[in-house]
Length: 171
Image: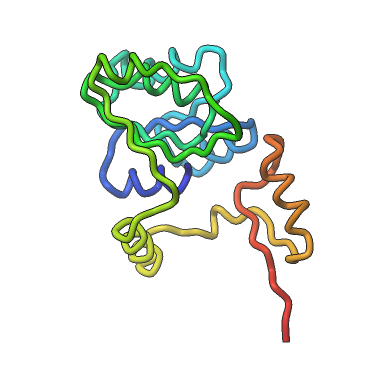
């Protein structure tokens, strides 16, 4: 989600609004200025906050990167008729979804898993030119044998980390 926000910002988008899960990730996103507004994806008034961040106007484009019911359906409600939402968030389970909101308002839903070649080469270009600093994402470095602990921490919802590098020791 944060890399998507950085990419969107590089495209010149103004009034960038993002949702994050977990207090630590919210504070981290605010600290590094990834967006104009950072919203707690689990807030009871999620949709109200999303709409307030755009002066009550619905959105033309939305990238859903959290993968939970509140953001998927909330963002769909915040999308203009004829608007487009790309879904990058991967849910842990099935999510109830209002297809009538999609169909009757002629909204476009584009699922995406990972990347395509154009996006990949654009990302590599940004990185090689130093336009995106990956170091700010790295919050910890752990040995490869701790991969299970790192994964459990990152998926717990209570992590202090954003991205963890796994160090491979070798000769």
